[in-house]
Image 1 (tube, protein in one colour):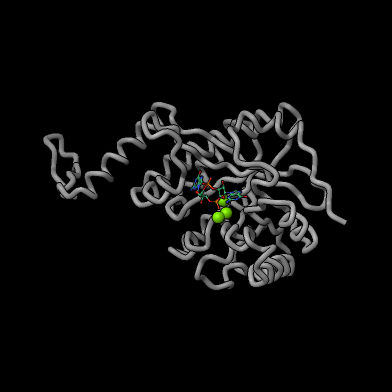
Image 2 (tube, helix red, strand yellow):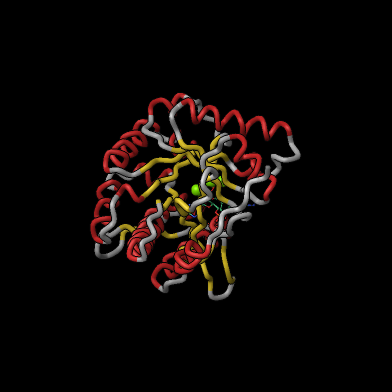
Length: 283
Ligand code: C2E
Ligand code: MG
Ligand code: MG
Ligand code: MG
């Protein structure tokens, strides 16, 4: 990109002509348009406790219904949104929709903790706690109804600033969760320093747990580690009853995965919760 001064004094960035940046610029334009034209969709996936089988939460997962490309999954635009800083607009959008959902559920007598994913850029935004508080107030929801998921790498980018942001969010009453736990390359020290409430075991360890002794050992050790630190432990990627039974036996607190439900449009969640029947535990 090259910076140019416009007549009105504003600096604009013109892309150089190589194809990569051409594509990036059009993706950024498309993302902006996606928000304006309501092409983003809030999907949610339920979180279930192993002990009672009840629905206790739901994770917000964004989808992009592109007019030409069809359903675009977050892996195809979240990393790009992070690089360009557009993620802040996207996070704002997800928080707004999640707060709306939380309010709508409460009116039907359904009280779930809604989990929202935050990225590095969000944590470096010192106004984030104020923005979050404003959204909760406007939608009449309590910060205690929210869990914010962050990854190890998001913390390690700028640990000091990330810690400040996370402490303020936690002081407001939001739960904090370490997402994709075990896949980062950071030390365990931040578990002691940060006001964390939950560990989420990455699905790469959970998916093949029934056939891979190594994976099963990692999952069991992570559950024990979390519990020893006084944290709630959640497994993502619970795809079948075998995984459900192993995790229940290991004492994992909550599970999330295709076995219970795939992510669904947010407006289907209330109906789904009302029809939910817990899987029977194996003897
Ligand atoms: P994540 O936060 O670790 O979310 C879990 C991912 O695992 C989701 O993929 C979910 O659909 C998938 N999953 C859940 N259960 C199963 C299962 O049983 N088997 C398998 N194979 N997969 C399962 P999804 O929705 O494609 O999202 C991918 C990633 O994109 C998320 O990983 C998260 O890092 C990011 N993401 C999604 N929505 C947002 C968002 O609103 N903001 C930010 N910053 N990131 C988001
Ligand atoms: Mg997550
Ligand atoms: Mg995860
Ligand atoms: Mg993951």
